[in-house]
Amino acid sequence: MSGDQRESDPRDLALRVEALEALLQEKGFLDSTQVDAIVRHYEEDVGPLNGAKVVARAWTDPAYKTRLLADGTAAIAELGFGGPQGEYMVVLENTPTVHNVIVCTLCSCYPWPVLGLPPTWYKSPAYRSRIVREPRTVLREMGLELRPEVEVRVWDSSSEVRYFVLPERPAGTERLSEEELRQLVTRDAMIGVGAVRAGEASRG
Amino acid sequence: MANATAAFALAGSAAPPRRNGELLFEAPWESRLFGLTLALYEAGFFEWEEFRKLLCEEISAWEAQSAPQESWSYYARWRVAFERLLAQKGLLTEPELEACMKSLAARPSGHDHASLHGDEEERTR
Image (cartoon, rainbow over all chains, first blue to last red; front, side):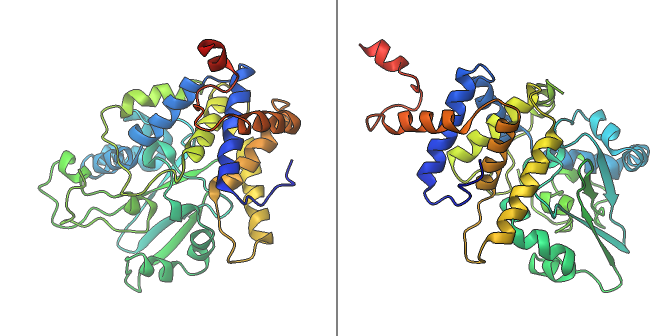
């Protein structure tokens, strides 16, 4: 089944996937409307806004933050998020001395329920190999300059665990509401390749 | 886990689309392939870990064999892993797939995507 590892023509791939869907539907294993709904769900509903809600709650509710760091899966489920790729969530807290960043060196594991599907660069061979070997350089290239005294920890997904970074709450945001804080939290900050900035414009 | 998507569809329904300006899928076949995989997973045909292992294997095999300039396609690797899974589970065989591709390729040009099994011919006759 793996004799055709090299795809030459994208049209062949499209045709192949079309045939897969036709056959699986014909055999009664799935329904195309169900596939439509899944794709729409991941394109429109699941995304980093979920993670941003978790982060903003943790910043404003110390008891929630304690629960989140103790049992990520349960605390994230409190906000209504869960599902595939989120069965065992571990939340990593950034501090003034420790910066966490996540990767999946083997494939593309990613905490879907809080971040949606991973961006293209996250799945690229370059990011997956380089972030482990030279994290500071990669982070700098991505626009995140860390002070020399900050320890960088790179977390590689294992078969079960999905990591998720709790970024530092920026200074100067003390008066912002949970709702306003959410607007500051970016996907990149929750992967660990960015920081949350107080002045960041709303992404709305 | 069967209702995972439905369960968090509720939670996320108020959320506006957020893609950070990036396309999730670069071609329609990629999103269909993703959806097919999730649909079978949610129906309980396999454990996610079974698929993940195959995907990891395919990605490392590609990385071990490919020249650096060769173009990388994540969902092309996903496709191979998914087909291996289907074969392992006895859900689909390569000859079935080849035959279906042949009949799809033989469609007259402009033929609609929705009619894969001659239903349309029946209806329009």
